[in-house]
Image 1 (cartoon, rainbow, N blue to C red):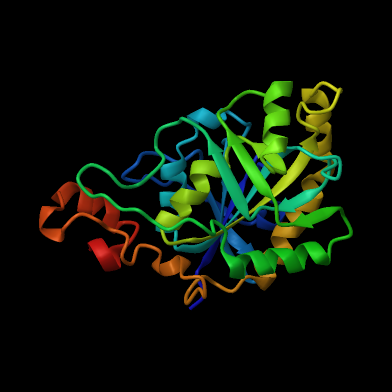
Image 2: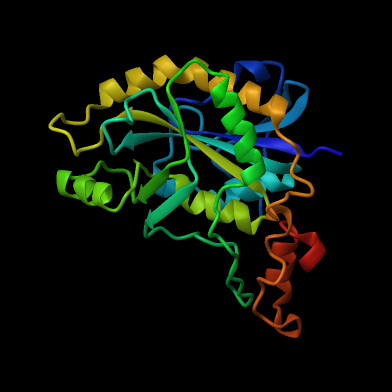
Length: 286
């Protein structure tokens, strides 16, 4: 049975016309409330759960988003794959506003809490060398290839603590590190998806040149680029839903990412912590 596809909409993507007949469902998790209710419906014959990352109306700043609750809510809703859309700044001349980037690597410069589902007596270290699911990524790449718009397959996202824009010195430093784009929400989201044994892929929409160029970042222009590309992002979601494989039996092992990752001996697991983790991985903690 094909699992549900989770959709996380970032800045500018707060609704999905393809889910006009969907139903908003309130969800609670052991890690608190997610950013908003989940919109449950069907896209391209695939059951999906849509979650606006910042809440409808963009009420939550990047540092206020409960990333653990968001991922836990999608897992509880039966999702096996998650496609995340976000708005980012470009760090190179070939990353022009309007370019869609299939992210394949991250550099973490955040300091926020809620970075892991583990702790409170149960320690785990989950492999993260390949942070994006290869199989889901292939579905996204195929959808982007069929799209007439500018896109790039593969790119490194520098994730900074927000809400803020880079100084020019920071932007040039991130360039020198080989990063391609800069955003505020890709982590800990991608890492939490791996801990929850979900296949995860991220498409980043470039909205500006960050601060490396001589031009100042302008919020009004960013909003204009986002609005101009909302329909394209929505169409991409429809195309990916038609192609994605379902999550079970992931060749990369996303659906068994916790195998061998738990360090704490079972007889030392606190009961409350194990019960909480059982909502993510019942085969290990149930």
